Image 1 (spheres, rainbow, N blue to C red):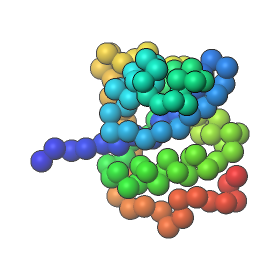
Image 2: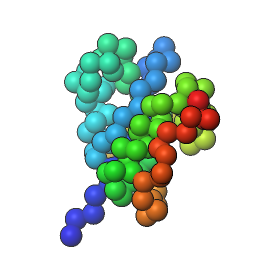
Image 3: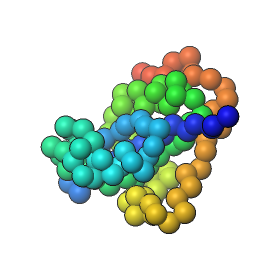
Length: 120
């Protein structure tokens, strides 16, 4: 049986525009954003650098997390990104070099409230 992984990621432009998304293939999706075919938003704002990602086993958990992150204020998204990548290095520069995202253990199922209104 094939094991699937789903990723929530944060990308940014050189001017600081942030974008959060979800995918089952982070390498391919980032390449789409870089080439301008990922989404209208990322093409318009030239969002082309990967700074954060999380891996999930279940698609429902990944979607709930994406919604949670998208609901946050910019400052909280920045803090999340800095927790994994304090130097704001474009993580996609490692693609093609034994890229192995760490897999988050999320067996607990989706949280009861994917959006914490107190966290905004």
